[in-house]
Amino acid sequence: MARGAADSYTARMRKATHRARTALRKSGVDYFRGDGSDWIALAGLLLTVPAIAWGTILMPVWCAPAALVLPIVAGGLLLRPASLLGLYAAAALALIVESLVLGPYTEGPARVTPGTVLVVAACGLFGLLIAQFRARVGVPWRRGGTMLFDLRERIRVQSALPRLPQGWHREMALRPAGGQSFSGDFVVAARTNGGRTLEVVLTDVSGKGMDAASRALLLSGAFGGLLGSLPPHGFLPAANGYLLRQDWDEGFATSVHLVLDLDSGDYEMLSAGHLPALQLQAGTGRWEEKAAEGPLLGVYEGAQFDPVKGTLRPGDVLMLFTDGLVEANDRDIAEGVDRLTGEADRYVGTGFEGAAWHLIEAVAKDVNDDRALLLIRRQP
Image (tube, rainbow, N blue to C red; front, side, top):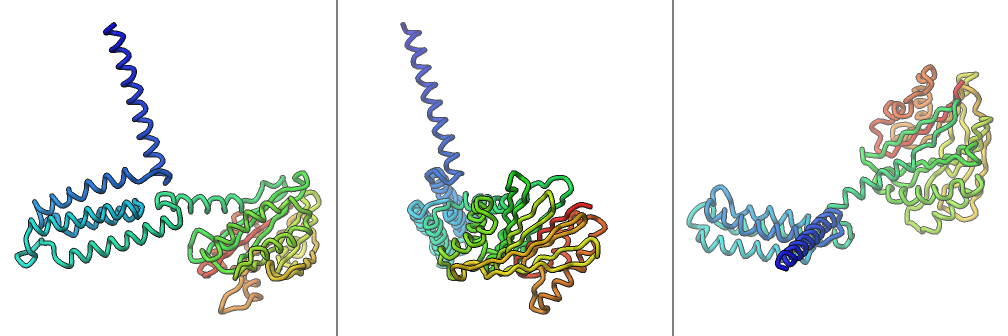
């Protein structure tokens, strides 16, 4: 009987220990994901406050009273505003204790001076402002960087070109303004019509860098959903209507929509205020502009987009790009286009392998604007 009771007690203790361990692990995981409470961080920081105060009292030369800014700065990054106030109260109490034990600051060094109080108070104010901003946004700092990384990767995945059948080469390069990770230029692409057709949309959102990145992210998702769901001639009118419904202060964009038959090489291109594409004729070695007519997206309703047609023969190259690649303050667009085609001629012999990235480096490396370049080549 006693042994059965002991076994029962041991089993209950194991279950209780397992539940406690599971709860602690879940709490830690939720905390680092930004979903849980901040009591673990608060408890740890509250313990550091008396430890720092004790070190200041014992060794004031090595552990200065201003060291209390360390848990305050950490609290500004980790805690919610309500918890932060509790940490500030503990830090204020520690300063009072230190000043009483060490004596007036006029009696020697390593005392609690008015400057120390001002430094700690200023750090606390900045920490509280940061915590309030995080609370208003609703994204803990632990998840903020992860979210931005995830958004950047989503844009990159959406901009990836689908694999093409044998006999075709494609590549694309995006370069945001100012070396940032987010761009106002984006590409969405899909193979439709049973894989026989390649549809590509290159869009340049008004603005640049981070100013245009949020709108580019929204539009890339919407355009990705529209692409392939509508007939080719219905895409740009639908995209135009979508932008108009957003009612943005700076809501226009330029876009070019390429519809390429991968069997015959015939293509149709529709443009919404975008720069003309360039086609390299393998037979003559010359670049030819392919300009379609159409207004900017998001300007007025009922816009009409007139296509231009062409054919990519073996050895031909089609190049789509945004204005950041050819436009600059010290030169006009025609000069920029001439420079781009001149650099592109160097890659004719190599089949344009890796040419997109190198062309941006060659003609627009230090331009403070978003740049995008798309190359499609029909192998000879």
